[in-house]
Image (cartoon, rainbow, N blue to C red; front, top):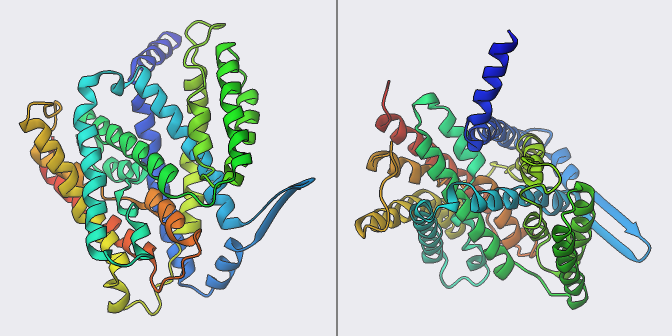
Length: 402
């Protein structure tokens, strides 16, 4: 019994690190779908009033002259999502140091796909909204990909999905996240506070110092991260970026315990919380769209129409087109286990923008107090559902039935 157990444990330890990640993200993606549907049901039920009151509940923290007062919705979007971006930063660092992205040959194809998958959807949105100064700020909404949702849909195909597709999808989503981070940093900032930015700037050399001193205590990094998060919040630069910055300084390897990785350990600890708490809570808080009174006028409004077209059409054309071009130019090749059909199905699946699209939408419209006669969530939900269904059907037809 012990021998069999030891052999099983040894076998599990030899599995790629991404295997556990895929399983967890798939389960989290399914939960994410459930909470999104629940939010829509509640928003269209007699409980809609209480749903709105819950999200508008004022929450305030005050320490002396320092005050942070926001409705619950913004605490979720600015606070909980900082944890999500911190996990994204950990995954990015690991992949760049020793994962799939550490080999330059594995970067070109998903990198090209990510560029096309952000550029073309943004252009599609701009085409529908050119000339509207208020609406044009939502150009980045259809450029996002929700990896949890996409992997959740992919998991429905079971063991027929080759690892190469999962790695390609995950790598592309990582590049997509990098693009989203840059977009948020440069395009979705409010009035800048120089004093708060100086505090952020002071935190960076402190993180460098404790990293160089081989400090492995999570508490130390969390304390510095909280200070940076508050300073980011007050600076006008979006607070979630603090999560990315802190993640870059978590030690990859331990100097005290050979074979131990503080980064991987922290990443493992956070995965469950993010997949099963942070993202579902975010989805429940942001996906509750009231569909009463929605008619042709709302569906054909340039903003939701541009978002839906960007996610459903722009993503497919952008990702597949740029990947096809990279392969034709012999810069890369199709991964083993993939063909043109499965590549196109994966490109369609990337049109599921949900979580990240909702997040960018909140930055583009809700938090900027732009009062427009549309609901961008309508376009996000329609585009994401259409992309998920079509992506699933194409992959189901292309993948081996064995």
